[in-house]
Image 1 (tube, one colour):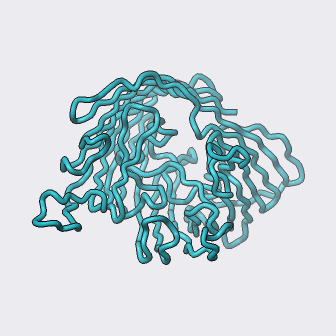
Image 2 (image 1 turned 45 degrees about the vertical axis):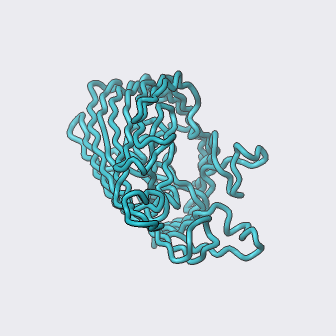
Image 3 (image 1 turned 90 degrees about the vertical axis):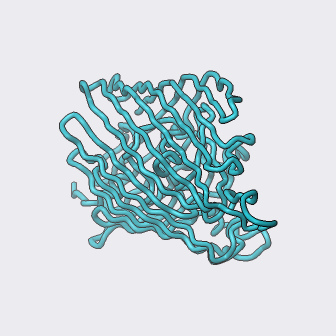
Length: 394
């Protein structure tokens, strides 16, 4: 059987978050099926600046990113179809609102040539965090808004991959290119550009990554409240070296209007499993950093400590009209929103297929001005969560 050398970026797409079963392998054609069932159990509490906190109560449920998929390869062609527990469909409708749609997480095909790999379909953009953070709260996205960026952003796109480099043209408004605008006009959205370069270690795990993305809103009909001429972008860098049985992960990011395409957010926690997003408004700028440290005591048991910080400023909804002279609608948005988090977890790998990860995490979001309310009239919100994530892969 002839072996095909593929880029590390494409290899990352083809590696399922599970073990997988090979159901067919003959004449350079291979079919694998895989799945991951992820759940959580625990409790959480929240508190506000006014001392009006109340217990959130018990946390118990199935993670939205539980999944089942099929991988196919034949010679230089590869494909992946993956279904998720909760996922917007390729038609732009949500499984929660329309039960007749199919929740495809991954739906793409690729072809490898001597000049790189070409991929088209729905998959994660090159600019997500794909292994540098460990906080499993909020669907394995606990660090988003608290020091780092999204761990998943599955969009319809065209990608070119070679070595560790990836370049993508991304459709952010799901199905805009399929349906056009409500007024009958043709789709006016220009694609977002995303680039990334990644290096993996000898165990094929992320070691270094630098990524950036840019979107220009060429029309005021692309998204509500976003005028023509708006720029949206962010960039980040991360490194995760290992030292024997220990690792350190260091990350930093900066961007403007990254919330418009969902990869940068300003979040707060009320002690629930999912984070809540703050509408900081147009032109919001975010800068943050995150640090994690981990050690494996044995092959089965380890310890991970981590935390992060994100500052959000200049958003149109952060304006404070109380400290400017006269009725100035522009206001003063010089104040920032600060989001902190810290966590400790004790991952326990029961077997190759089953893992159990207890975790205690704290999240706090505070506005610099009392007028920059976060939720329910308060300028501070904090959540404390203690629980365990149960994950079974096949």
